[in-house]
Length: 345
Image (tube, rainbow, N blue to C red; front, side):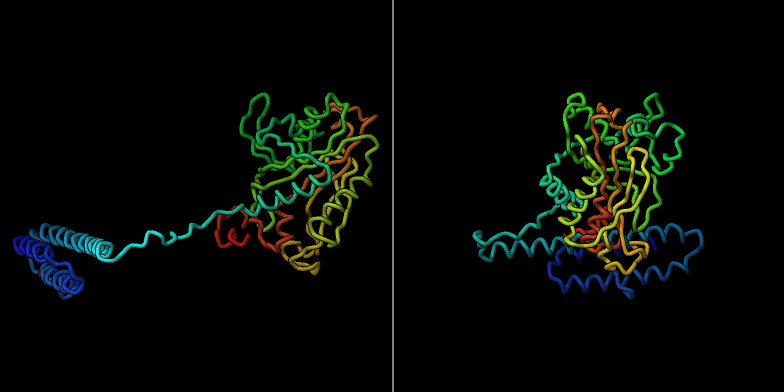
């Protein structure tokens, strides 16, 4: 049996070498590797061998099969390459023909949406201020009226990355940027400011159609003389008008430790047109931001005298805004890297 397998392998490789056409190659494959070919006929005889010879014969049979299959695939590739070379040599090549177009990349829908938000707030007199993603517990919480063991910390499921004296963390919101902006831009609490603070935030959330563990936020802050809640409301209504047109909005009371009073702003759901759906939790409206008047202690922590200065702040959810604007039903699409979704923008 061993001699027969070795002889079959040698004969098959010898007959394969001169073949350069598809039809003879297929005949060779059927003759040696087909279900009724020479190799299959020999392998059927393995069961009749003495027990002590079966292992060696079976091993050699498998090796022979793998060798012939590899030779077949190598010959197929060589024939294709030879055919291509012959075509290039025999047919004229027009080098003036345009090449194949290269598909260009495009901006991610989240980036497109952020740029639209930047444009709107820029037209309204707000400058962009970038703050850090890795923050200290002091700036992220304590300077915003959220000391250790404060129950409001439960609202931010935080990723801590270092348990040192500073307790470093991945920021769960962009609000700590308010402290850094006031300290860096106010010239010692003597100048008004209007800024937006965009950036990525991270929370230990249960992922769903409405929640992700990473998401963009755009914080807004305006500080000046005699700034009132009416200024806040008028500014945000104007932003919604420029972003969504005349779609209805609503405000209602909320609570944030760093603003007082606080509110939430919703926009009528575009997906269901206010009728109620899973994205808006069947309320007809979807939250796009929280807002309020900057708490006096936060102003003081930023370097301002709250007896002379006042301000308002807000935090936008850009992905929520994009969901409303483009009727997107699941926030997970933004970070799923599915080209079927991304190529629509």
